[in-house]
Length: 193
Image (tube, rainbow, N blue to C red; front, side, top):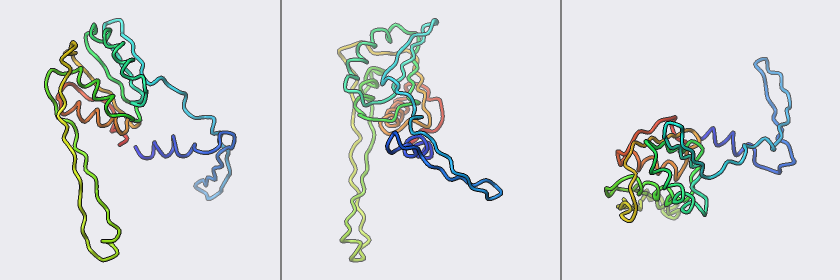
């Protein structure tokens, strides 16, 4: 996961008109310089895409939980989602964002109250370290108790979540909560973290 982030994001950082200079060495020890354009970055994909297959399966691709119009987009699509036989939620290109957007979807998938995630933060005090004190304390929040929506229809048909190396942060939180809900199957590669 971290290598994917290094090679797909960090390597391409910098002025778009300035190529990346790579110096590579082959097995015999000979080096060569290569220049790679930064303009080769991945194409922009919509934050949310939805389609329905001919056999009635809904495919909801959520490529980021960072769209300010997410709630409107999802709520508009939800009417069509309710008519499907099953739903595939594709998070393979989701780099995270606002976790409440994922929670909004999860509240549509169950009639039961469900537990959210725990968050643990290490409190670091540099003074303690300089004094030789090995005191480490942690703050823990959660879990949140989440209630499903009661003012709309709940989607109770089969659900599959697809994840991959580009599934990060809030998308991973979504996957953890979906798994804890025992709501469906998760398929794919290990997430990015």
